[in-house]
Amino acid sequence: MTAVVAESLTKRFGDVLAVDDLSFTLQPGTVTGFLGPNGAGKTTTLRMLLGLTAPTSGRSLVLGKPYTTLDRPALSVGAVLEATDFHPGRSGRDHLRILCRTVDLPDSRADEVLKIVELQTAAARRVKGYSLGMRQRLGLAGALLGDPELLILDEPANGLDPEGVRWLRDFLRAFASTGRTVLISSHALAEVAQTVDQVLIITHGRFVVESSLHELTSRVGGSVRVRTSKPEELKEALHREQLEASSDQQTLVVRGANTDRVGEIAFNAGVPILELVAEGSSLEEIFLDLTSELSS
Image 1 (cartoon, rainbow, N blue to C red):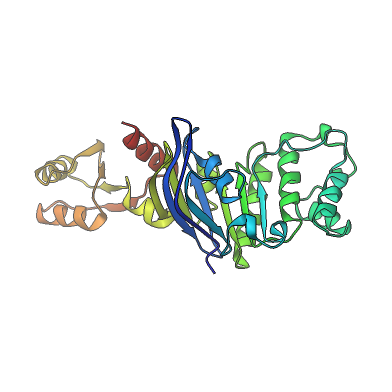
Image 2 (tube, rainbow, N blue to C red):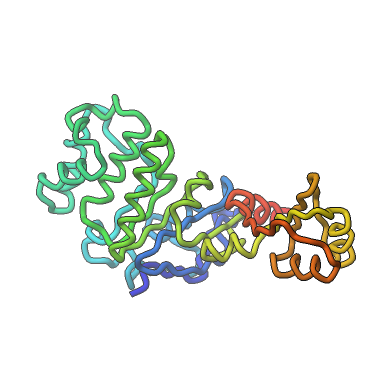
């Protein structure tokens, strides 16, 4: 069963078109990064998936049904849209026990998820004394109470220290490896690149691209680094083929071509190659390039 299906999701707030005809699917066993600048429509889209905001048009299915028609949805879907929805005077354990009772789970489940997110030593402390990173972990613990098939997380790495970010990455990969699905909205692009299988990039409520991470980094904005003993001759040969290259002594960086093409041009020009390496752009470079193109 497809984990999430969005079909032409559109949302208007008065004259503002917040989300414009978004369609995508998420398959079980995957981690998807949902990316876009502030105001792109990411949170509105997540709220529509979770039945918190009604779409102006279009629809979404979660585990084969509209979220609002799921039987005991908290046992199927775990979501964290904000890490601030806590009573400051309650302990982390009491917060989770109250959530357990609202969905008919035993109190013991609270301690189980506190251990999963490594907050067991802070379980008895009041939430008002928690750091932002600890609140993020507590929010994730609440999302895990029902042992869900799908996790939807908005900026889950916000406030985490480097050790916490690594822990989150390992946890999400392990979660997906059991056949479950993760959708994370994030601005931490470098971290997303180490975590996700695919990316959905939007700006102004519209899709820029939907792609696997591997395909995206391979086809968008990559470059080839080539080292030769005759850099000027190679540069001239590339120019004849409408390719530009920046140079640093014996090394050229060529954009818009793969290694096969650069190697063929060098061979035909009789230029010796000492090194030829493909370099994909970082996810952050791709994100900025694509969103700036659509905004211009």
